[in-house]
Image (cartoon, rainbow, N blue to C red):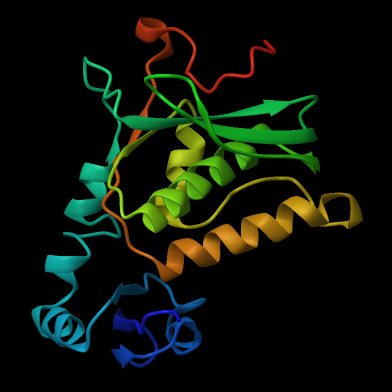
Amino acid sequence: MAKQKYYVVWAGREPGIYTSWAECQHQTKGFNQAKFKSYTSREQAEKAFKEGWKKHWGQGGSNSSAKSKRFVSETPAEIDYDSISVDVGTRGNPGPVEYQGVDTRTGEVIFSYGPIRKGTNNLGEFLAIVHALAYLHKQGSNKTIYTDSVNAMKWVREKKVSTTLKRDASTEEIWTLIDRAIDWLHRHSYENKILKWDTKRWGEIKADYGRK
């Protein structure tokens, strides 16, 4: 049974604390510069609501201090081998897409998905990161995730994608997955760092399909 969540809306149509994602979405979807976050207890939610968005959401913008730590633009000098690396395999862009997550130390495949009939490289990278987050969330793990896609990192951070890929019968599969991934990001919080893999220093990311 899913645990009850409490959604704090600091900036929305009617700020307050809501007990369902649907209610939160009603207050924030389409609202310019909406600020909201989910909590696992009413006590946490009430405390956060009273303290205000600046402490919990971030100074002067949508990126909280916690988010800034999770998404690191400058890659640390050393590889964190206790992590998951993700990458995409495509045949044409757009074209069939598949992705996988591997153990960064051993290269063992932890999860894989696809091929998806039609998509783009960046959309596949986005799905791979969210799949890794969901997998680690179920494991109760705060392991780091490596990706070589800056765009995908940005989309995960913003909880939305920016793509020219049209929604039609040929792209229905990947758009269904994208919509689910965005919904997951809105309904869950996480502490995992998402880091840019430094290909120049470290070679191809461990999850690479070797199709270049």
